[in-house]
Image (tube, rainbow, N blue to C red; front, side):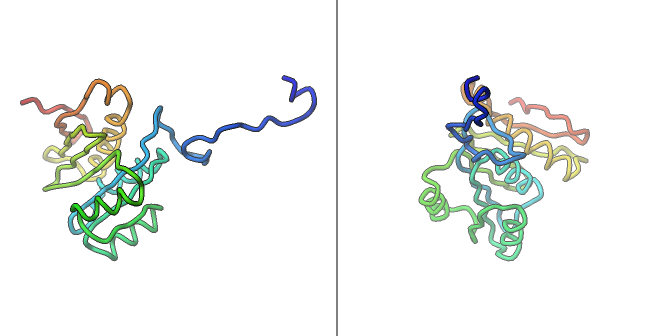
Length: 172
């Protein structure tokens, strides 16, 4: 109130984890680093997950063996590209650059695997599920599983996205 009376502007003492960037969504806690890896190239679902993580102020590195595709994807979406598939050397490179990894997203045979702080989940498309629907819903699921309550409750498992975009958990 005193600043207002004296006509001074109050300056915030702390910046947000995103550096106070506009249009940046913030999670209630900080996911600092993520690694998204494809085999030969990144599927639309992997790219959507990488962008969703980037939008939460998380540092994201992507990797695939197709250097041209990987470079273009990284440049167009503001991500860091590492020119190789997932292996121990790449994970060591990412750990050296970022300090540690909070999220690892990979894809095998059309199934996305999320490893969030040691909790592993998977999501796969049902028959008839469009790529665009699967991309959108899988990135939403990734962010949901990244919420603090999900980590505290150890929510993880195998999920299926139907052709209508509905998510269902696969029970054993």
